[in-house]
Length: 156
Image 1: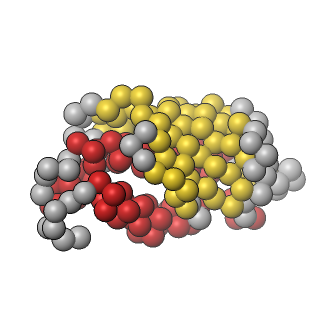
Image 2 (image 1 turned 60 degrees about the horizontal axis):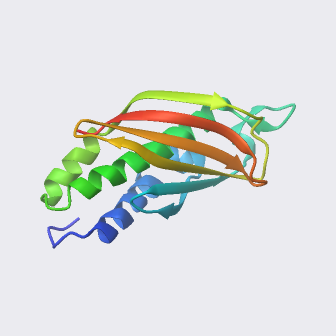
């Protein structure tokens, strides 16, 4: 990343590349960012045999569901962090992003994870100087709500 005049669109594109290509576990999950803006983010992944938890029913592993919700919530917290950092030097923005981490994650599993693909969305509930809280949902390809979550992230 360069020290050119930073704008939010450029930073969010770089953040997308990081989440999709540079975070190894996100690549294992096959996580792709569908949409990203200051209000919400959306990610998508395809059902694959390696993500199955219950092989008899061919449903997603609960850990996959919670991991995707956590990654989507973390992406939303990162966007919130970027919004506040636009006037900071790139080195400071990178430093802030490397400190972002999950403090708490609550997941409610509502239905079995069945489908050919899944969409996870997140929105910001609170964006503080030290902590951000996000709300996440996961739907299957039929639009059925599979799980919801709340994530708390350290951002400062």
